[in-house]
Amino acid sequence: GNSVTQMEGPVTLSEEAFLTINCTYTATGYPSLFWYVQYPGEGLQLLLKATKADDKGSNKGFEATYRKETTSFHLEKGSVQVSDSAVYFCALRLKGAQKLVFGQGTRLTINP
Amino acid sequence: GAVVSQHPSWVICKSGTSVKIECRSLDFQATTMFWYRQFPKQSLMLMATSNEGSKATYEQGVEKDKFLINHASLTLSTLTVTSAHPEDSSFYICSARDPGATEAFFGQGTRLTVV
Image 1 (cartoon, rainbow over the protein chains, first blue to last red):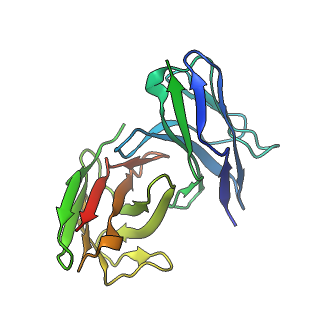
Image 2: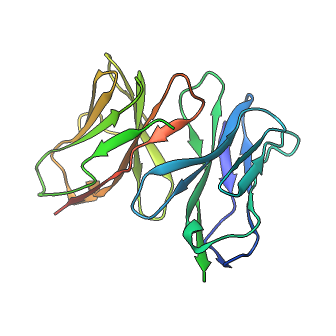
């Protein structure tokens, strides 16, 4: 089946540290890949996306590259801020499908 | 990006009553909307897919008579939790996909507390 596995949290870092949140997927076709962010008490916001192999999605200093050979879409940021504290969800959607398949989420806390 | 508005943001109701949650796509037409439930510190659980003008498709294990979904127009879907009980307390989130976009857009969520 189709699934997404994320790095287990919680993750706690100091401000300006380098961030990596691992995400790997299993899919029967060629999915589009997404990272969503959820701030406390809110819904999800799209952070970035990639629709085909080797695409790099980027937004707000975050980046993720669609790696077909390793079936991965790891999220990175060079220097995190306190305001980046949130829960991050990796997700996929197969082409032609409507549903998103989510990972379990990774809670990130950035300390000043 | 496109905007999906969910209302109310939070609601407290008594056991046995029904609660309606609205999900609106503000600047696009959504033939399909999705309803999720999220337990504390957990991922989103898809409850049902709401299709405009037809019956919703429920995921396995979700009681369709308890969680009534209506998608009467291209911009509005509603979720009614009927005869609510404390175990229905949760965070409910809707999403919609703009047919012209790859990604789905999410509402801000509704915190339901049943007392």
